[in-house]
Structures are given as C-alpha cells and as structure tokens.
Image 1 (spheres, rainbow, N blue to C red):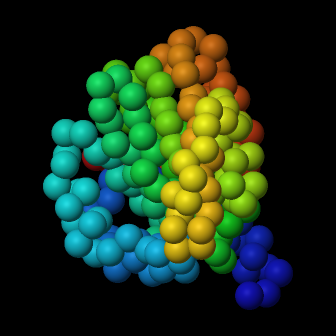
Image 2 (image 1 turned 135 degrees about the horizontal axis):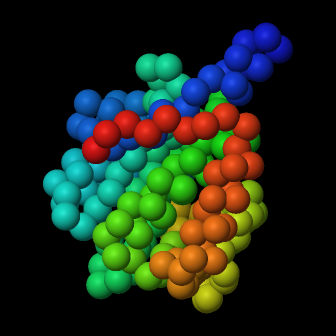
Length: 184
C-alpha cells in the first residue's frame, strides 16, 4: 500500500454495527489470521443465536470488515469473548472503537463489571484493556493449549459509575475520527 493509501485508510470512517450471518466470511478471515486456534463457523453461528445474552459486533471501513468483537452477559457481568482486527488495520483504533461499543452494550444490559482472558504474551491487547480500566485478577494456566500459554484474567469493575462513563468519553474523544454506529 502506498503512503497516500495508508493515510486515506487511517482517516476513513469506521462503522460499528451488529454482526450478522452475512458478515461471517469476513470475520472468519480475520479470525484465522489472528488466532492459532480460530473459532469455527459453527461456533460463531451458535453465538449469534443467543440474542438475549450476547452482543457481537463488526467494524467496517467502506465495505471491508476490518474487525469484530463479542460480549456475553451473565448476571450483571459482561465477558468479552473475543476481539479481532485485521492485521492490515491494526493500530488505527479499530479495537478501541469495538471495545467502546461493547462496553456500552454491556451497560445498556445492566452490566456492572466486565471480564476477559488475554494471552500473557499479548502486551498490546493488555494495554488496550488497561485503558478501559481492566486490571489483572489471576491467571488461567495453559488456557491457550495450542501454544501451552497462560491467560491473564482481567476485570473492570464499577463500570456503571459516572467516573467510568467519563473514562469512556475521554477514550472516545481521543480517537482521530468519529465512529459511525449502525442500528442494531
């Protein structure tokens, strides 16, 4: 990609909307690039059926799917199931935008805390999650059995407070361009 194309892509509007079955080809392409043991088509289809307790999102630039994320809601807690961004679109705020929308969906559904697991080697993702108030709370040994790698368990608590909403607002205001939200 040329430098001009890079600048255009970096400043192009990012649209965040609900993941639908028709998006799964693009989602699976990214999933296979991002994970040594990618989720299968059947697993994504199964998750999309749980409309009352799940929120799955995609990020698009133009017509291209460049990222996705998921949230499972259980008894006042939200569990971030996955966040993936196309390697060609990383470091452009895609994951930040997806996390902002996931957190908002969790808040709409009454979540008071969020949790997730992240590879102990994935420092970039841990930094992103720390911006959202996640702190380490434990380790799941050999959680990623494909690489004999542990998972760091992280929690963000009290997400239903004015202070946390101010954090979200500050994160969003730091983005170089606004996020376009598609209707659910």
